[in-house]
Length: 296
Image (cartoon, rainbow, N blue to C red; front, side, top):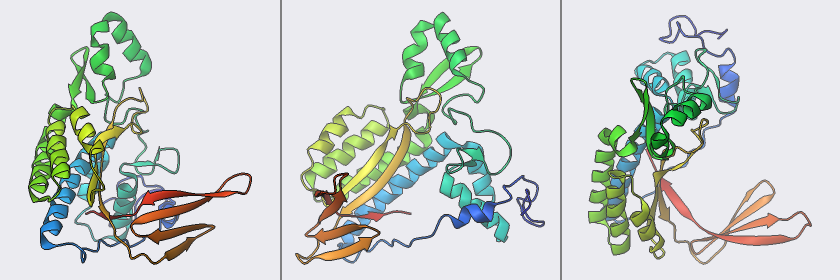
C-alpha cells in the first residue's frame, strides 16, 4: 500500500499507513490454545460462562477506547480482501485506530487520538475542565469520578456513571457471572462472582474486592473490573474495563524447565519459580502461581 488501501478493498477510500505490512510484521502470532482436558464437563461450562462475561467487557473496552475504530473493525468483518484483513488485524491489535507502538499516531485516517479517548468529549481540554469547574465546583466529584463518562449536556459537563452508560453490556456480563457462580463448587468463589456481578450494575466494587481477598487457593479466578487508567490521557483517573479468566494448573512434582532468553521458568506443583538476576549479579527467586488462560 502507498498511503491508501489497495484498489478493490473495502478500505480503499481510507488513508492507511503505507508501512502497515512492516508494522504487522512486528507482531508474531503465538498459538496458546486452551486445553480443557483436565476439567470436568461441569467446570468447562463454568469457564464458558466466565469467557462469555469477558466478551461483554471487551465490547465496552472498544467503546471506551475508540468507537469509530470499532465501527471500522466491524465493517471489515465480512471482507476477504487481503488488505482489509490486514487493517482489521491491526485494529484488533491496538484496540483502536491509534498505534500503541508509534506514540498513538493514527494508522488509518488522519484524526489524532483524543487524549481522553471516548471517556470525554473529543474537544475537551484540561483548561476547559478547569474553567468549567471554577464556575461549577459542585460538579468536580462527578467529573473526576473514576467510573463516569464525561459528556456535555448543553453547556454543562456531566459525569454519567459507567453502570448507566454501559448497562446494555454490563447486564449480560452480570448474568453470565451469576450463571458461572451457580456452576462453581467453591462457595467463596461463587460468592465473589455474585458480588462482582452486583458491582457491575452499581459501580461499587468494594465488597466484591474484599470477597476476592478471602479466596483460598482457587482453581478458577478472574480479572474483571474497570481498574486500569491507561486510556485516560486527559485527567488520568478514568478506569477502562479489563477481563481475563485464569485456571490454576496442577503439575507433577517433577521439574519442567522452559528457557526463554536468559531467563529460566521452572514449573513445579502449580508454582512458578522465576529466576531474576539483580544488578550485583546475585539471583533470587519469585514464586508465582501458574495459571492457564481461556478466552475468545
